[in-house]
Length: 120
Image (cartoon, rainbow, N blue to C red; front, top):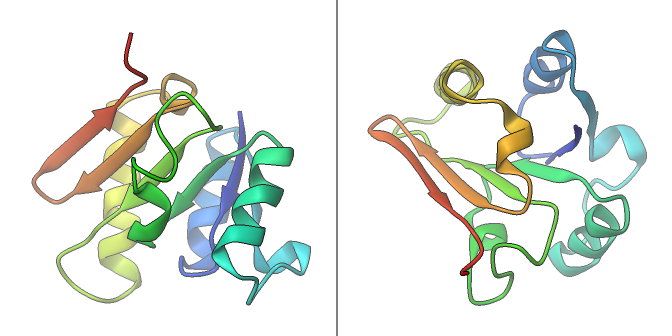
């Protein structure tokens, strides 16, 4: 699976995904840091990647309905810092195969995982 990691997440998240065998790249690695969300979203979709982010704007189902894009994995920790984000990423990685999240909007919090799929 091809994954793009947003610049609001630590570099450790990129490495963790790579260690799990995913083709993960960071927004900053590709010189996309600071891009407006709309332009970044278009580039991510052109690459057909799942976006891993902490920016809830990308998970707005009214702007990007499930099934119309490569997918969004939104990490929403209760606390600031690198450790809470990494813990949520670990939670989703042990809970499911990210391939199953293609085209979904998935929100991971310390209380659980919510997956929104395309309407049938």
